[in-house]
Image (cartoon, rainbow, N blue to C red; front, side, top):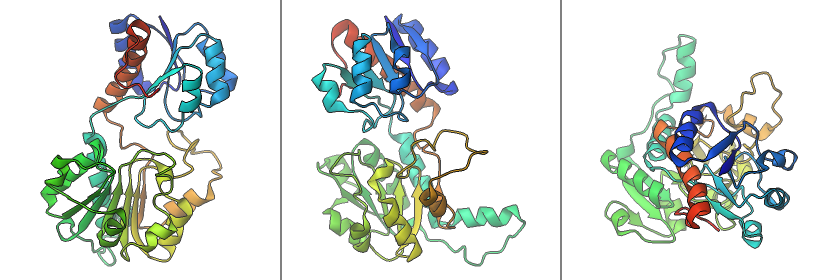
Length: 327
């Protein structure tokens, strides 16, 4: 059995080698982001595994199908970069990956603290030996209300982490979890917007959640609200965030992911001219902390995602079963 591995990062190679030896699958490993021009890399392979920088659209899926590919496994939890409907229509199995929610949950709390304690301007000052305090007074979580939008595995773990800080916790989700209800109060989304000092998103991206944070949504929030996004960039309207920061309606942003980041994150652009003016403009504000979509990036999570992808492909090909199957 041969599997084509696109977008292989150096930190994945050890785990890919271990999975290859354990499963007996031959891995054809490439750094390339998948696209129609390099679809032929998968020739002779029954499965393809990818990350999230390429758009897995109908033409690419058709090309892989013609080459004999039977299944696609993304080494990510998110799957909005894959045309699932077309994959289903041509009989292409697609699965995603899984990992423990702790890494992203811990990172989310860290982002809250960085914004609330004004760490970014404090860091800037320290680099020029300015150790003054003026303008750096922060807020304590125990005195705030935190709203968690999306109380699934990651959101529930964020609530668990925050419960030790003594803050008031609100939650919104399409489904109620009684374990979450022991620590957080379930409310309607508009009520969460109105009452929360800090709002953090933990949702998958689809048509119903795209731009769930819009200008209209922000208008319903407290003045000075802090917004955190360690999920998917397109959950927040980038232009609405800029307007909110400029008008001081938003008191701070902690963004590990941002709308329009494709082609930017996970790459070295030190000698490039960056064309995304909105992202460049937003990140320069002192109350905006932005990182390179790395909340997931721990040793445990990387190993788990690689293992899920390879096991998903080999399991499907050998038995027709896959525990993380999407279509």
